[in-house]
Structures are given as structure tokens and as C-alpha cells.
Amino acid sequence: MEYNISDISDQIGFSLPSTVTPPTANISWVNPSQYYSKYIPEKTIVGRYVTLLTYSIGFPGNVFALCIWLQKRMSNSSGYYLAALALSDLLFLTLQVFHELNDTWEISTLDVKFLCEFYPIIFMTSQYLSPLLVLAFTVERYISICHPFKRERFCTTTRAMIVIVCLAIFCLCMNLIQGYFWSYNSQYDKCLPRPSAIKNGDKSLWSVWTWFSETVVFMLVPLLILFFNVLVINEARRLSKFEKHQLKSHAKSHGNATTVMLIAVSFYHIFTTFPVTIAVALYVQYSVEPEDSLVLVNSTMPYLSDNSTYNLVDASALTHQWSSHFRYILVKSIIEEIGLTHYAFNFYIYLITGKLFREEFLSFVRRIICRRDKKRIPSWNTEYTNVRTDPESSNHLTVRMVNGQPNGHSGNDKIVDDSETPL
Image (cartoon, rainbow, N blue to C red; front, side, top):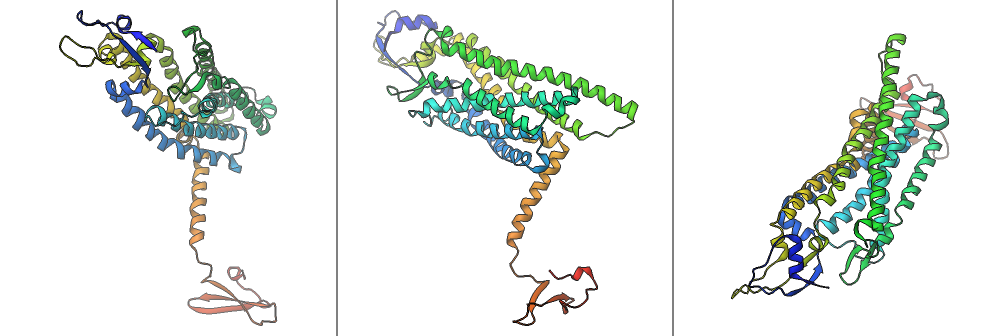
């Protein structure tokens, strides 16, 4: 593809010397991160090392959360929702690793045919499923607190499993179109948006569908979560006052503790989602022309007797438009890192706000440690030893070592102390 340098220079706000004859340059696609790393190295630091920290916290946290919520003691309707949330977040973080390798570390992991089209479907499904699961257990808690007589009908484990499956199918169907949006471009050996999908710019199918889906999932859903949480908090406060004055009870019930934990998860989701939504909405205001953001001009431009090269991106980076764009990209990357913690920090919110969850977690850890210690115990027993008195007889003699002396009882002897019962 060929462009005239003077035409592009007019669009981005710099002019060539009058003595220079504008040549025609070949323009090829490059990854924007190649010059983001040059002009805003802070973005690279945040994108690489802060994300690694989030992964190191999120992966073990989600694994532990999934194991705890699947325990028999925690197997209620809320536990099912939170187990599904942990599994969804774990899947999202796993897929996010490939995205980071491809985009931030510039290691080609998605530039493969079929994977290019299939990956965004699963990636976006896991991303959309998380806020919808938060909404689901928020509505479930709303029914339990504000409509207690309907609890037995709607707040059951069977209904929770049905809702989880339906939400997963809904998110999958909603993102099947991503397989059309992305395609492997053999010319550039890259996974790029399909040209027909981004045709007509802001009025393209890509743009319209993205704005619709992002608005529903990351703006409407958090608003609904906030709305139901306000209702739950008001009703819980009213019930608390009633119990205090009428029942003279100051003890917090398990239901109230669960409500506090779920409200904490919901509000943290809102806190981490809204800033990302706003940052994405401002992208158009701080964006640059498509020709500027996706191309790099390699052209040798003779300045009188000087045969130095003139890089279009270097020149355009000095303009106000590019400076604003770089600042926006840096702030947006920081906000997105904060938003990523929603998929990593839920386990620690459970530990802080959920007493029952803490108890079950400690019990789970103790069982793991004890199981490991049992494997270290030798197969022979130093305290109790069974010996056969007669090879032909089925009677046994139980010998217990007491202060180094054997104290034996046959099977027909009367046991005086229960502590010496044969094993």
C-alpha cells in the first residue's frame, strides 16, 4: 500500500522542509507497542511486572477459592455461584497470560490460523461471565434478604446450577461473533481485525457491537449490582434494628455474615469495573488517526546534502495529539491493571470478610498438612503390635509397651482400661 508523505504529514501536524521533495513511501503495519515502549516505558513496566504480581496472587487465590467453595460444608446456592466465579476467573487469568505474551512481551502466541479466531471467543466469554455471576449472586442475596418467603423456591443449589449454565451459554453466544471479527492475516503473519468487520469506522459492525456489549456488561450490569446492593443494605439495616430492639439479640447470624461478604465482593467489582469502562469510553477522544497509529513510515529523505533518515513516528510523537495519546495510554494501562485485580483478589476478600470461609480454609489446609504427614509415617507401629499366638489359631495377642515393658492381653481376657482396646 502506498501513501504520499505530504498527505500524511498534513494530518498529523508537522511539515517537511521546503527543499525536500516528498517521496512515496511504503507503509506497513507494526504493533503499536513497539513505539509505546519507546515513548512511554512506564506502560511496559506496568504491563509486564505489575501483571506478573497480579498473576502470582490471583492463580493460587482462585484455586483455593474453588476448592473451598466445593467443600460439602460450603455447598449452598451462594457457594455454587462463588465456585463458578472462581473457575471463571481462573480461566480468564489463564487466557490473559497468552494475551500478555502476545501484546506486551511481543511473543507470538496467537498469530496462528484457527487459534486467532477461536481464542477471542473463549477469552471474551470468561471476561463477560464474571460480572454476570456477581450480578446473579447479588440478586440471589436480594431475594434471600428482601423476600425471605421466596427463598426456598429461588435460592436453591439446583436453581443456582441452572442459572450458572444459562449465563455461560449466554456469554458464549454473545461472543461467537468474535470469531468473525478476528482473522489470521497471512500477508503480515498477524492476527488482525477482519477488514470487512471494521469497514466504515465508528459505524462498522465491530464498533457498534463492541459498544453495545461493553455497555451492557461493564456499565449496565454494575449499575444493577449497585441497585440491588443498596436494597439489600437497607433491608439488612432494618432487620438489624428490629432484632436489636425486639429480640434483644446482638449476635450476628451466619446469613448476615454471608451478606457482608457478598456485598464486599460486589462493591469491589463495581470499584474496579467502572474506571475501566470510563477509560475505554474516552479512547476516541484521545485516539490518533488510524494511519498514524498503525503504520510506520520507513523512508529516506535527503535534507539538502544530508542523507539522514526521517522517521514519521518520531516526528509525530512531538505533536500535542501524540503526547495526549501517550499520556492517555499510560493512565489507561494503570486503570486496566487495577481492573484486572477483580479477577484475582476475590479469595482475599473472602478471607477478610467471611468467618466461615476462614474456618473452612484453615480446616482445608490442616487436612492437606495432616495427609502429607501421614505419608511420612512408617508402615510399622511402635505402640501397638499384633502377634499371632498360634499359627493355626485365629486368636491374637495384643501387646502394648508401657514404660518399656510389655503388657499383653489375649482375646479372651477382660479389658480393664478402654485405652488398651485392641486395634
